[in-house]
Length: 255
Image 1 (spheres, rainbow, N blue to C red):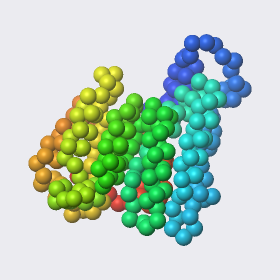
Image 2: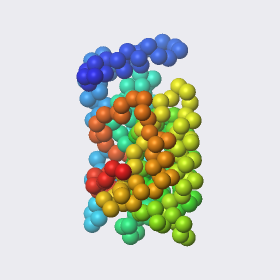
Image 3: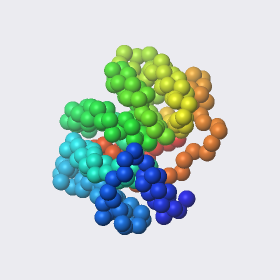
Image 4: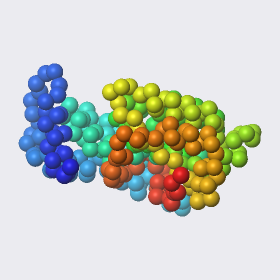
């Protein structure tokens, strides 16, 4: 669908919703195409003021400002909320990562995760998630509960950074039960919701063969597969909550 057609479709839906008629703001006299251009300019947060000079890492204030801008846009009117959120979350992926090998930033990651998990805005509107599979058991369970609460989840990318041979060691990175719980949860989504597309990626090519040789993991991928429809082909234009820009652009290998 062309961008102009999509803009008109969302605009008509937004204008027709709501229980009470409200006076039109002068802003909505602009054609939908112009409004969507303005939305894209309005929700963009400049990362430079929030960047650590030496490492390029982004401070937690960056995530706070991202969420604050979206909340303010949604508070203007019902129509702006529908239009802006439909476009933003259609093209935005939340990058969710508890851990980092960069010394000194683990605390920042925990703060960001807590901030994102406590956001009702994300719970009801987030559509695309990239999850770096947590090492810590408590983080795994917290993340699973978070994912289970999403109302509009459409795609989930799970990035794996270690091999299955670590599964039974103390402090293991992986939990068979946690992954199976995720599969069951996504399969039991509300009848009115589409089953999200789930893909697994490894951050090193040698991990692909390791994981595809594990029977339970192959069964899990089959359970999570959605054979009824084609995967979405939307273009992700920005990332939400990405403290290290290199994470989202790093080379990944499809499993």
